[in-house]
Length: 435
Ligand code: COA
Figure 1 (cartoon, rainbow, N blue to C red):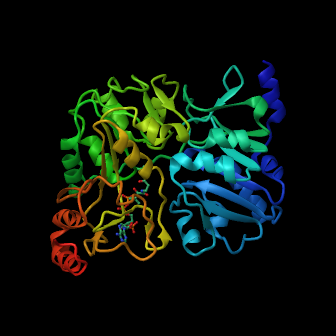
Figure 2: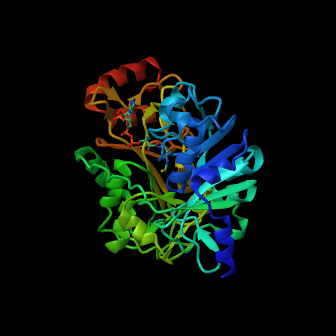
Figure 3: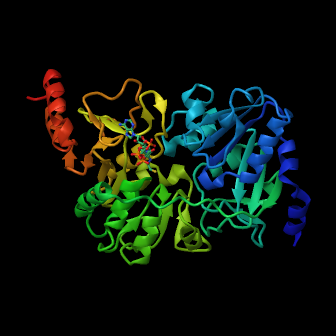
């Protein structure tokens, strides 16, 4: 009961909480559903009223609009945004140089927070308090534990509809500076559209995956198609960055049971979840799901403790030497590095591990080849050519690991769209890649 009294003492409106943020504060929030919608609205309102000055906010895969991204010039003196992974809401401001970007690989983010970032305020959405005074961080492990350690002020939105994850970071009511209550349905990720190309790619990869493999599937229609193509497998395990609906599907149809995992046998491990309401209901109070901090989950050494790790991620373009760009279109940030490299490295070190980077052979209605002689000027290399393993398009699989420049170029050209193969061959010859 004493926790309830502390809870009541700290309870206030979102507007009152936002009013506590001092000028010149550095504010931080965590990925996707950890973002507190009502508090974001209250922060926006303070900017609109010009009552918040010289603050910064660092965000990750934004789901709710913040004025520092939607109207960055108008609110520049109030709030400046920095993204660690762009979403549709932040991409434009970052691209125009009106918001900043912090390069990172996901597993290392907690170390960046610890060593480099001044965290004045951490804002987060949590599930309702349990009888011991703890709030579960719901469906997010990610960076939150580190922010909770470092922040001078912890502002919590308690969402009645946030699932309670039995094994996820928690924050105690005594540690919280202030809290507000909210009751809104969590946003859902629309199901990926599985067209003929993604289904072909999904089937090609599924053929390579043995029973008992331990899976990481990234975001997007290709990794989802792989998930859907694995329903006839047995004893799959899940140790992943993002928990996806296709993984829930695999668990519910009996293909995944986590029985072969060396670490966390019997448990599904992720660092965050974002998907359907069905997934949120699955996570709620489920002792077989653990959502843990990213510096543990995505640490390549953790990943590699499981055998037969299979990681599947997507990309925007690749050059003929095997450099993969999954984060920018030219020098314009499209998304971020996320944990792609973490899983490429983890799979590389896992006994029997495989890492696939898969994408349709073309973009923009077939007008652009995603396999290119060179990356576009300014493109960020997400997975370097020294660590890249398998590349997949709807035309097949190119094994790059252990292959020379000319072997790579030939393998990549063979899985490029036929309309672009001659051009790629011509460029490869000019570059001396066709030994
Ligand atoms: N040149 C120009 N535009 C391109 C392009 C290219 N080579 N490749 C794709 N595009 C465009 C597409 O046409 C599309 O444009 P639209 O939004 O106007 O339709 C857009 O870029 C996105 O492409 P798409 O293939 O639909 O992306 P996706 O949703 O499958 O996501 C990534 C692919 C690479 C962006 C995404 O997986 C990512 O951000 N990865 C980095 C992090 C990561 O891998 N994390 C791992 C675990 S979650």
